[in-house]
Length: 176
Image 1 (cartoon, rainbow, N blue to C red):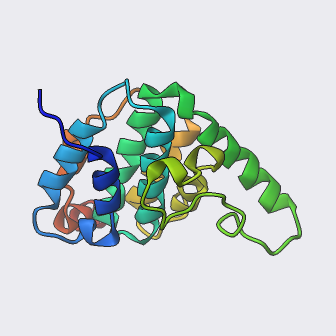
Image 2 (cartoon, rainbow, N blue to C red; image 1 turned 30 degrees about the vertical axis):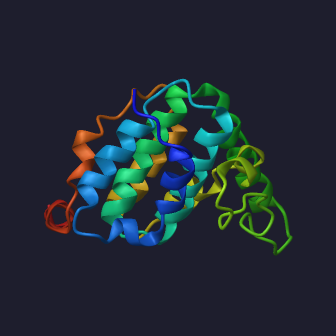
């Protein structure tokens, strides 16, 4: 078998905002999805990837967010040990809307985005508040897809449907 030292750490560091802008992004999406399919990945690693992808989706173009949201959803279904990330996000959203404090979820988030080692990112202690923010995205397709996290009984998404999302498809959908 092929052995590549620190493979997931290097893949984790490669996830930057530019990954959504490169011309071969569809290939990167497919390969990343394949690498994260295993149900034997440790919870800290899965949580770190979920959190990093969620954070990147906030500034990604709509086509990138349309890929990241189903990937996060499917990974949460495959790795139930990361379910607290969603539960904390729901509690945090309720608390922040009823609180008069001006601090945002991002400011109190223990996740360290710039940490190169996923083990030290504190992702398991965080929440996926970014998904709640994506429900208010300016692109209606992204907002409705992010709302899938409120539906408890939804099946997994077929990732092939989202890999080739394009601006022309989004425009056609918006015009209709």
